[in-house]
Image (cartoon, rainbow, N blue to C red; front, side, top):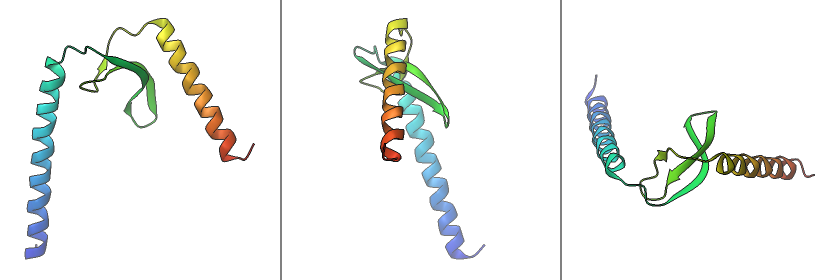
Length: 92
């Protein structure tokens, strides 16, 4: 490994440490948040997978308690937006 590679490796390690520290801080903030306000929107926990969820407006965490009505409204909105996007993409 030459000196340039060592510098890059050191920077990568430092950046991963920053991400790890930030993740721990974010988890702590979310754990202590009382989620006083929320929106209902699609939540994705991995690429290609999503579901309607209450999202805290403060800590941006997915929170429990979504009602069937909120869930259906979110699906309806998502479906409508998807259809509008597909229609505009194909010039229809």
